[in-house]
Length: 333
Figure 1 (tube, rainbow, N blue to C red):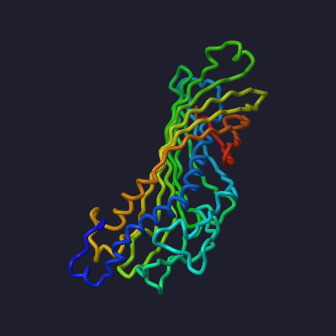
Figure 2: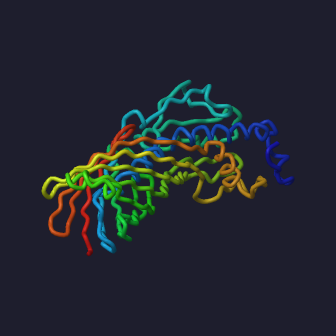
Figure 3: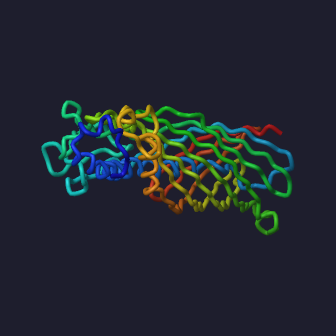
């Protein structure tokens, strides 16, 4: 047994069902990983672009404020995955042995999943979660920079919590940029600029998940969150032509991914006493098994046009995914 039943209720439960509930939790974690991982991978790309609009050295105490529109293109290969009955210990696909289901980035298709022991209420079979069903994910964010001298700038990025279909997304972070070409006069004389940035960002993404009604009550896993902590190192080289600055950037980031179930707690907690205090907390402990760290290498191309105190920038980041960032920056001083 992985948890303790309240004595008053335990006698009415099929002990075989109780014995195999741990298998159900294993299945739930397996499905969670397949469902949300493509979306958290995409979130890293969404937060990677737009940190630098110019590689030039700025004068001390100069500051800028930027407004961005970010467009992420959802690739077809990350919109769905295949499940088989052999993937599960407790669950089974209703009416079949295999099925294609959406990830969090996929469509609104649903199938029913039941269990082989009858613990899930037959009147409410599990409906697999829907995806966002969007070809592009568009979200706005704000940025700012402040030069503290010696070719060094402090950078900031913030996006308000943005609603997407069946989900939410938010990113914020801080960084530091240093101009390298100031030490290489031959580059400066040719209006070639080299700069590096180090930044840290937090990405939070959440989606509707599973509304499961068992014979014991609901489980409280109707929403799933992905929390990402990314460290990013970026090198940009640029060339000025009149009022234009064209840049090529190389990005490497390391991201830690953590997950948790949120939403209302399950009514099953009134029947079964879980060691962590609730079924939701118990499953969140199980989710630690799919925590992961990933390294991404990304190429960024961008062009910036200066007009008076305004800088208009368009950039594209690509490798595994494609992400476009359009922004307008205002030079405050």
